[in-house]
Image 1: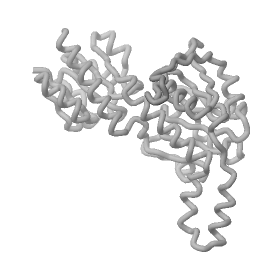
Image 2: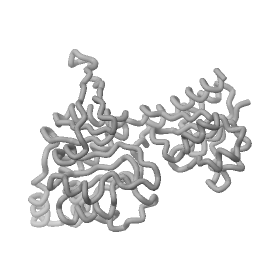
Image 3: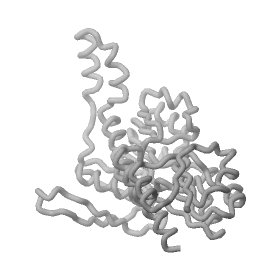
Length: 323
């Protein structure tokens, strides 16, 4: 019997697929320091971002055949090493993309209408005078329509961001390392008479994107220990009043340099879902009046978790069935 450790949990829909295949699934959380020992009793491990599967764990578990990542990024897994040792490494690149993309726009809408600050100040608004004062303060918001969004990274999430942006009437700039064109399929409501259209975007240089974008959103992998993709040099190239969103990985943007740019007004606002330290340890960022925060929940919607559970379970079952 195939035994699976879903160390960071799995949606009920995914577990149902494993049950139907006759696999045994444990969702009992194993602490990181005890993982290598516990995995000797399992054929596969499924993780999210909380659990890491490094070389020491892989070497300690010669019985392990599959490592599954419930999500897109696999920087918490030593992928090449695992595959070189003959393990299958599986992820779910498309399942959570829409949810992450929608969170990007939750932060953008919050930023352009200054809801991050209004929400903090409204509880103290007890008189008509204070109400009118706040109303005046927040009457200088802007629309997203007609503005340019720079998308750094052109994976499934970046493409979903582009589709939403086009629907809002925004201009889209992509940058990706290989500079290949980005093809985005957009679904439309049948009432519009067209179910799907395909758009092709030419990639621009990193510098051009930084200079010309009104808003910038990050969608790139970020191996631990790498230098920030966005630091002071990159921030200095951006438009005055740019808005920045990071739902990719903590460290992609230097938090110290970002705070400095927020304080100077170079950056109008930032929406941050991922942090250099989790739990959040930069209290200046945590309490900054121009920042909206979310606790690493990009793919944490009911729909995404169900899709992730189903896709991952189907791939793992297929691997063991065909083996």
